[in-house]
Image (cartoon, rainbow, N blue to C red):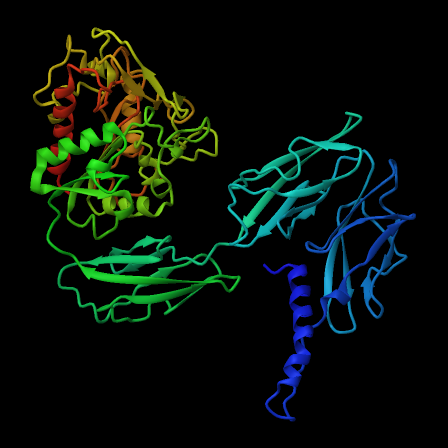
Length: 608
């Protein structure tokens, strides 16, 4: 969005350039007509009430003023000053009613330039927001309903971190000061309080950001394209034998946007094709679309990690797990760096594992008191480009094991609905505990060997007895109650998991009926909790089943029914799923390896 200052600067530059252009014309007949109006002629120079002058912000075209306490705002005599030859409506000397909120003053210069100024006048001690701007975008104040609406451009900042500037009436205070950054993903409130303490006004601020140009979905027949909005690429995998020379993709865009070539236009995709999207601001983005026919069925195992190769992995647990996979699966194994996750790199992968546990290394993967998704690198968070690739891969039949700090990926893949900006409520399955979420996590040292962490597997821990499931082949349970996994002297962990589903499911805890309700609602299978828990309290390991068939009548309709792949998640709890024992000895390391191998083999052999 162009500011008034930028427009004036542009016009001034053009006027300075004009003599040079005239002197350097190619012929005497050449003419240069300056048809751009001088917006400096359309300003309000001053706004005066009873000898006092208002504050005028020309960039946002806002005027604010506080009059003495008790002033009748329904009849305020306003004196205006504008450039010679410019008119203004309402005209100078008018009696204006400001009791209902802001008033628009329209200027009109002789050269055709015009401008709208929003004027807000309050009385001393009367709790009001007089103006509200985000950058150079002025908010529209609805004084009747105490709502402020602000529209910002797609390039005007990140809506989760905006620092608005606003003016309140003199003699009042506000709970969150002007200039303080806030997350405007959802409406936020500001409370203005009179200094006498007897009156207050609460304003709800709604920020609407114009969407940047983007392609929301790209489908050809039954095949959905994988969209990377960071790299501006789209990849579509078509059935074997598809004729790529004549395909008509269906393209979805945000409202008001256009694309060239248009949706449903027949295109030859023998080579990559460029599509250009324009949004309502006339900003454009160009996507490169690649369409290929499917190859043979995927057969490989993969470990996904942040660094370029296994040897470079910083997290000791990720490195130990990836090394074990490489040694176990040999030529059938691939290591894929997060940055290299793409439809092409995942095309041969049948089962993938992503795992890390970083309290000791402090790699920046940490939760906050309100958001567990910051345990993930940005590209794996919801709407992240690599998360979208993995989501599409699972929907097409890829299977995955996620564990440790990586387990919030279940939300990024849209397999479990969760909105961490809102309170836990029906259908919002955010985690219920954020223990050890800070950067250092929890690192316990000097633990005795008889303090054993493991996965609680009593029949009463789940909806039914799960001990005979194939993922426990070759493993034994202590006293028939738990699978021991960890007894090293030094252990690290973050305690981030679902304890129960109070306010989300009914029943939510803690009998087998609660576990059954959970499984039916999310098409899942619960496999245990913490070692010492005797009932179904807590979800330590869960298999998220495919959703394209046989869902229960209680299945949550928010969840897409096109997941052909399954996901096994080991929640970040003190069940002891830690691959590296930090220089100490874990007598149950072989259980971790066998348990993991069983899960990967079970996923690999599922029919997709």
